[in-house]
Length: 441
Image 1 (tube, helix red, strand yellow):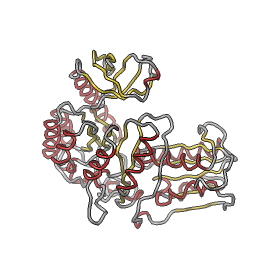
Image 2 (cartoon, rainbow, N blue to C red):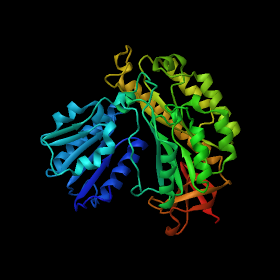
Image 3 (cartoon, rainbow, N blue to C red):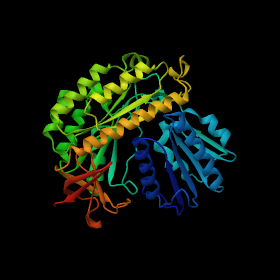
Image 4 (cartoon, rainbow, N blue to C red):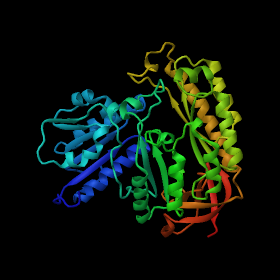
């Protein structure tokens, strides 16, 4: 791409949604910069505007619609390119939103987006879609840097084969497709050369990495290769299904300093009946045993748990089962979402949809539990010493903020030039959800 004629233009990239979307937008940025385009904020005038949309919830779809309208209104002369999951599942709706030429690029064609966006000739409407479900290979999207990020995302996988009854993602992202170990290692090398100290290993279904290869590989195989080749970097694992956390993975994490003791695990519900209707592949008791096993093998590890509240048929008793399960476990924090129907999914047609006010009340109850769990976990860390990746002092306390190995956000006094450095910090006190510490070295 770098051998092509340089084009003096500006580009704005607006991104909604998950870490994979963030990674892919960073790849677009790298591609545009290779062509000589200048990246500008989406609020500024731009020759090209790229909108990387999300559709994981009804709220995300609405945000995508609003953003498309805003960009079209605020950038009347720009070439507008819409991509991402909302573009994949709602292309006709986007066409109806647009009152002028627009380009829609499906998830299976993101590797072509940069060239499409800068093409000199284009029609009133261009669509690069195709059937995402038939895609056999992951889009090759190399990244050089992330804008204003200390921690980089390392996308190793795309797509999902699970088809949970509430989830639109398999229809928007297609089936599981993994990046080759060689290309993953090459990308880690680029990030290392660019000065990153910590990478988040991520995908749409990260734990399914390598299952589409012959012979089959496992995520653990990839992690061993990365840690062996680049042991001086820190690595965090993105969301893993509970049944994918094996004893072998836990033993490797316990024995390997560069893999951070931090888990992000989707529970969704603690009620077995709801889990079955969700098409989840475990029960509440099995989930509890997995978390306890992780905590035993990695004492002090952090556990972030996803919970989906108000799924069709969730009775008060079923919700109470979820609450009781989470309250009994050594979890660190909760990501709580109200269920929203996604047209085209099995759950959207289910009976016994839960009223909005009921969902809001249950979400509020679990967010109170989230606060309690965070404060308890942070208080238990007082007096402990950690290796912390310093990020920045852009907070109301005007102190350096960074994350410990087990994902505790710590505020401490440090000179600005230590940003993006790993330093030693002792946790001194906790005030509400604010954790304060002292830098030792």
